[in-house]
Length: 144
Image (cartoon, rainbow, N blue to C red; front, side):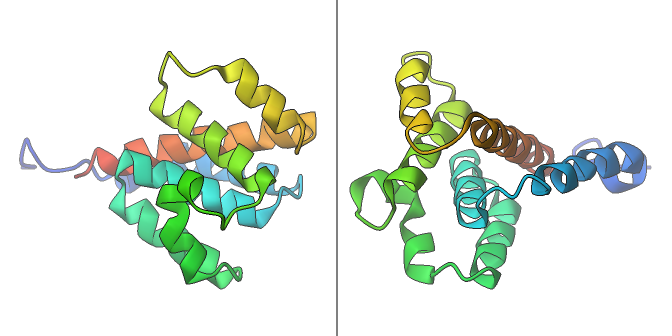
C-alpha cells in the first residue's frame, strides 16, 4: 500500500506520457536554437519554480556545454548585473514573464524586444522551451 502523502512514481505509472513529452525536446533541438540561451532559460524558470532537481540538472548541463560558473551563479539576478548579452536578457525577461504569469507584465513590449534579437521561429522555440521546462518543473515539484 502506498502512503497517501508519497509522491507518484510517474515513470512507472505514465511512462508513455513522459516519453512523449521528452520527444518534444528532440524535435525542438532540430531547429538549432542557441544552447547557451536554452540552458539559461531552463535554469531561470527552474529557479523561479524552486525545482531543486531541475536546477541541479540544468546547471550541470550548462557547464558541460561550456557555460561558466560565474554566469550561472548570477542568472538569479540577471537583470542587475552586466554578465548577459541583450539577446540573453530578452530571453530571460520572456522566461520570467511566462513563468511567473504576472498580469501586469506588458507582453507586447517584451515581444517587441524579443523581435530585435530573435526570428519568429526562434521566438517559437524559446517559448516552447519555457513552456516545457515549466511543465517538467511542475511534474518534479509535485513529488516534493
